[in-house]
Length: 128
Image 1 (spheres, rainbow, N blue to C red):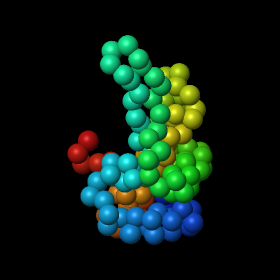
Image 2 (cartoon, rainbow, N blue to C red; image 1 turned 60 degrees about the vertical axis):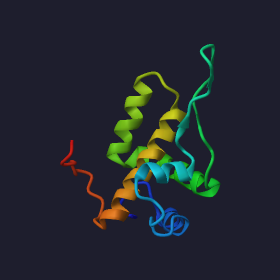
Image 3 (cartoon, one colour; image 1 turned 180 degrees about the horizontal axis):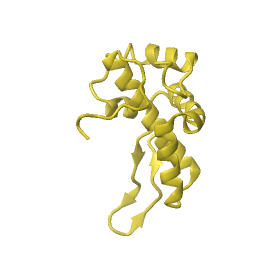
Image 4 (cartoon, one colour; image 1 turned 120 degrees about the horizontal axis):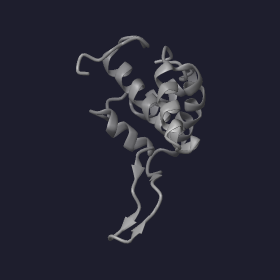
């Protein structure tokens, strides 16, 4: 998991311990919900529309570690940098883009943990 740019030793170990070696989850979306970085929409009926925020229901320490890892990932992880730049170019806030990067980082970690292969930045999914 340390082959992913942005994830260091402490974050990788914390991810493995907190998720029981990723055995608790079947999909990356479940992992993101567990960490608490999935967006929630705040609206009431048809008139009250609030800003979308992250759910913050989940493991607070793990969410903090992944968010801090996102700072490094958007500088050194090519896929995360592209995502960050695309979101900021649309006029969104940098913090929102960092949360998206953290979400992508978790999905990359989940894929690496489940496949057992090292990170390859040139990998292209056969489904795409």
